[in-house]
Image (cartoon, rainbow, N blue to C red; front, side, top):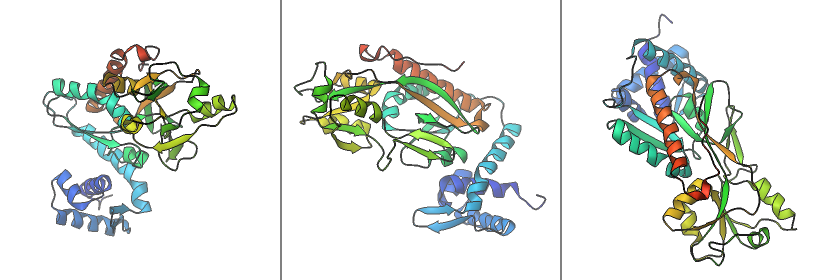
Length: 332
């Protein structure tokens, strides 16, 4: 340790988060050559390459991947020790990073961004697509502050808070023959179905570094079970990853889609779909936010989580009668 310059760890952390020497240098105020020199010193000290240049950026070695969350924890602890004890949103220029699907972005983010404009005009936010990144690794190294979604098997180093419970509904094009009508299982089984899922996930879930998240945002098991009661199988005509594409995909077709009720309400307000309840009682899905334990007492991070909770509550309170059976669960 006596030979270790703390600045080397700051450079390591920046490269780990950005996976790019130029962007890492910009993040910490160093030139690319200074970043490269610091990496060379750290490589010599640790006797490991740490990062390898690839077409996709700086790929970490196994040693770097193992080090990254520990280094991030150490730097956050140092920042807490010497940094300001309070967070002042009205003057802060902090940049937060949230991982979310387009569904969560459409439902929760508008309320959150209005809060930012009113209370924290200089605070910025980056929203990363939660389905396209190694989410757990990004939380571990500190690139993602909060992830929004449906999670299980949450490791001890992470915390989770339930925001609300969601349920599925049926949506069709506004000029569909069944638009505005109650739909039976027989009628639904005769329709092509459009659903949202991450490609290649057989059981609808993916596990990364101890955290399991739901990648199929529809209840495939209940759907199949209800169809089986009438001797039918779901015709999953289109499986694609974009919630916001559903109204456009449904337009001019005889298909129906399964969508989260809160998102369906957003579509309904723009008159881009017609909405019907499922012809069976489906279990609700918890929607949560997840963050790293290291942020538990960080005033800025606590402010962020509180504002996201408020945004989820506003989304629930502003929703139409379509979803008046859903509710928001608050952290004790």
